[in-house]
Structure formats: structure tokens, C-alpha cells
Length: 161
Image 1 (cartoon, rainbow, N blue to C red):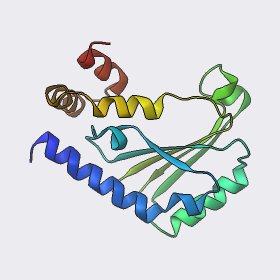
Image 2 (image 1 turned 180 degrees about the vertical axis):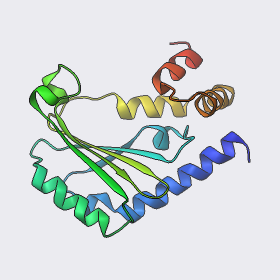
Image 3 (image 1 turned 90 degrees about the vertical axis):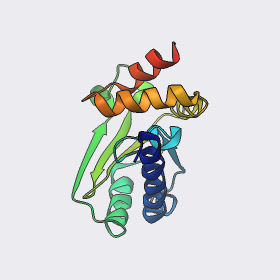
Image 4 (image 1 turned 60 degrees about the horizontal axis):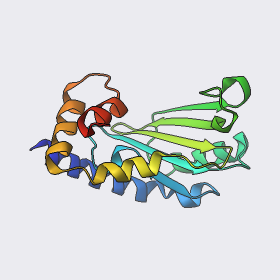
């Protein structure tokens, strides 16, 4: 199977997983698919979803995670409260709740942003969908052969940005 065919197969698997998760009924906020499952440049079973959730609480998210555990076989769940001095960057707008879920085959990242601001995640993934076939293949090759790769750096290098 070629890298392109594998990426397409993984993207189809990601869609099936999203349907099983039914995130819009597990949480009171609208899920937004981001990352490689949206761009089509997927090489590993890693699903990234974000929510604008300014009224999120740990209790609401943990209740939603319990619902997800009834829909898929979760093996591990790492839940983080990244508010205040625990946020991932110095920007106050990057406060979030963050959960990393693992099934036997998939890693699922859920980010619940506590501040609604314009985030580049969706636009970046959609921009990558417009890459040429040669660029897409080069990106897939680099992602598949570079352990612990920085996807953003690969995208910039290949697209000349």
C-alpha cells in the first residue's frame, strides 16, 4: 500500500472513530476536527479535536469522558487542567483543559479552549489540503520516516513557507 493510500485509509478510519465517539452528544460544545485527519496527511492513528468551551469545567469534561468510555474501549486517559501558570504558553488565551485518550489503536487529543479566539488550526489543515500531489507525497514521506517529527516544520519546509 502506498503512503497516499495508507493516508486515505487512516483518514477513513478516523471518520469511523469520530462517528463512534459522537462527540457532539458527549460534550455541550461543538467539536472541530484539526490536524492530519483534516488535512489528509495522516501517517499514524492520531486524532486531534478542539472545542471552543469558555464555560468548561473539569466536571463537565470528565462526565463527557465517561460517556466516551462507554462508546470506545479506552485504555488510558490523561486529563490536564492547564489554566493559570499551568497553561502551555504564556498567553492567557491558551488556557485549556486537555485530554489525551488511547484506545488499542488510536491516540485521541481533545483540547477544550477556555478563551474563544481565532486559532489557525483549521485554516492550516485546510491549506495543506491544497498542496500539490508531489508536496503531499513529500510530506507523507517525511512524516513516515522521521521519528518524533515536528509536523509544522515539515509543512513549512515542503511548502517553502
